[in-house]
Image (cartoon, rainbow, N blue to C red):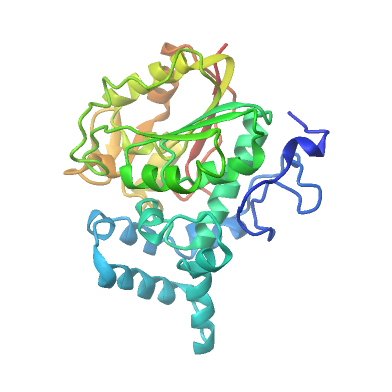
Length: 354
């Protein structure tokens, strides 16, 4: 595992999130040096997000909720989150709103995207946005063993959840590229992150996706990443392949192999179907209802399959093998299907280019 012995290599710069310790914070508050690998988060750690709130998440992720416009649409989200918060004292409500719906970010001048952008990933609360970002930064540090001068590609960077954190980890000699199909998010990141961190760049990819970008110009199955061969030391793709069909995945695996240098690593998340997860789905224990068969994968919505896609573990393994990427065993299991032992919500697969 990569261990940083010189604390000067990992200096925090710029206005990042406050220094409070969180469940998955990969940095020590005093030394600010990556810690060693810790045990998988327990159900207690994940309970608030994927346990007690498991019933509200599918509701908030429905297409009609993501397309809400205007003051009253977001008002419904606030009301639902207040109901789910379990607050019993009325005077706690102002603090809850202050800390979770943008006011904290405004007053402290933190790099936190607006609610309308966080909501595209279901991360309406600021605390969830921070918690999951820190969680995956820890996985990236532990599994991909990055150096401060890495060349990183954040595929499907969204509203910058990983990019904002990596701005505090990567040195000025590093380079970061974020690619996403949401133009509003890319514009916000270019306006708010790139001026403070000139080595961080964001590009808009006008790729068709029936759920996220129905007016997209390019087909995912034929899209070529706008980067030269062997441009990156590592790649992150969080919640990207969970919204893609198999015919599009094949091209993305080919492009990932092309842009990674030899020895490069990639961390990708999936919803994987195997005997255990399929059984739990049939028993009604899963937080995602993958009931529509697409031949090799399943979806939760027959009309808009890209809303959430689960593929068989066998198919995903074959993609890695066909495109010359070696999986670093084991595959880290997810809690989405209701299994008792897991690492994160989705499956986490780490691979390298030999």
